[in-house]
Image 1 (cartoon, one colour):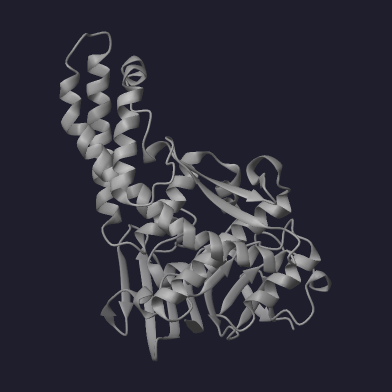
Image 2 (spheres, rainbow, N blue to C red; image 1 turned 90 degrees about the vertical axis):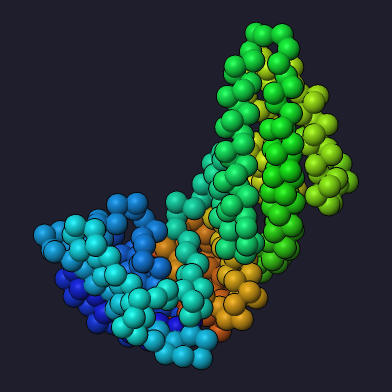
Length: 367
């Protein structure tokens, strides 16, 4: 995927913009609050029809304007296309490809985006890592969303039954049909999660090693809420899950909730064998998330036979000069990259890409 031209009208702080980015690495510099991240958001919005920054989409419409418009000339999978995304201040949205309603991501997938907020993957709680893993699987495994939603429905019903049985003797047979469904769906979710994570772990480890000059090793592990022993197949997982439900039933009745299953699982990131959440430096945490994002880029390229766009917001913060150079070296020639930074030009790696400066809602080439 390559963006040949970007035109904006009333998008965030840009009343208008006409920009032809470089075909490979675009480094977007400038002081804070000039619109660097807004450019990445515009690219993402144009290709997906949504923002990666806000759930209130009307926020992207420039203050006091009736609408915004993002126009992209793109090339991908052997064709050129004109993509237009527009949104009115009252929430009406259109997404057109060559003048017809369509999905631009079909040209070469959804852009891969890194923002500082993604550091929650390492620093946050288990629910955040489960959500990340589930979102990754959704784009690669047909039927996963339906399975996950059904599991959540069964889980909610089982929890209501457990609450109703608290303090009562008997009546446990009412749980049996819900146990069977929970185990069937839960074992499938765990199977799919572990399979994706195995492929992800190998790629992420390779990327992390490249960025850290092979001085550090990143590993990923799936942490189940019950012992998986040597189980590999769904049937084995079902038997182990069912056995653990029976063992934990007294405790679940006391608590009034289901205590085992994929809704309680986690992913652990380790650097040189040490838990990244507890022991990694800020630079190591950022490198870990970058490795995950670049692994996502590689998986998408294998699936689509072309690399999607890569958007990196404030990526150089808290990583040293050597890692910056290694990151840009890794990305060289892979895909079109849009990278924002507040670093001075003198602090950027040499021969790092085409440098642009954003200032007062305009963009100029800076070297």
